Image (tube, rainbow, N blue to C red; front, side):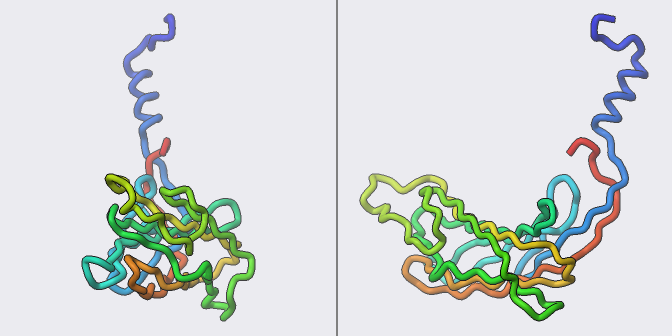
Length: 190
């Protein structure tokens, strides 16, 4: 034996079981925004991400991805901004609003976390002046994570303050998240 399978069929069963698929059901929020393209996640193929662009010129356009997931009894909404290395971006304010459309009210228990490549934890602080460096960073990231309690709303909206892209103010569209139920087959060990 010595840790090896005695029968090939037993080994194959374990291998298939560990990499197999199982029936699954999950509740998620599907985002929508004008001009956006829905994308599915990697493990459970729910369309919980939307990609879109804000701004209308090469100097002020900014690719954005908005997505959602659950963590315990909270809904997590995230914005991932993909600025080119030469873009300077920041939000006009720190006022991100999550609105419960079904109950016609704004969430009051909202948590916001910012993750940027320059390690500044503010969404409204401008980037440092990269012109002082020999070369700008090769890869920039700017993520905003918003968390609210799950109150089983069918539709919630994320209202984002304008973003400043290379000194140009660009308005953000309202991003809607619609509660959905997905049932299907998904990987067991994902």
